[in-house]
Image (cartoon, rainbow, N blue to C red; front, side, top):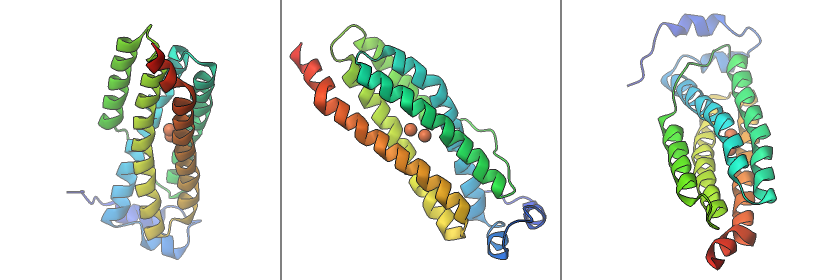
Length: 188
Ligand code: FE
Ligand code: FE
């Protein structure tokens, strides 16, 4: 159960630049849940900022390596958008560990070790990366819906931008897999 603390007053007082509608939507359980989820995905993005350079280094093909490097830049942007949108709501990001992302990254490291030196390494890296993207797509999709429900318009815009980037990263990974990595793995 989500604990509702004495935030009601704080919410009322904070963010003087917010309109009345928004203020009225900041003292309920959905708002608290929204903040929890923002903290979770923020930590997930932080974990990815550490993991993506290792994945880029491990990638065999230049195309995949560049893809990871490009997504690292986007990932930094995803983290700062979360900081920005929470601040715009007059709130702050809680510290939290995203256990799901921790598990996905651990599995990714495991499969990278197992496939090291094989022609299936890139296919393995792509599979790990797509699981990560799908987790993010689920989280941001949910956050967009909740933000829309509460009328947090600025947050909706920022979250949608990130959601779109996660989706196109997933599609690019599919293209790399289908155009080269899978055939390469199958040829050995
Ligand atoms: Fe992201
Ligand atoms: Fe991502």
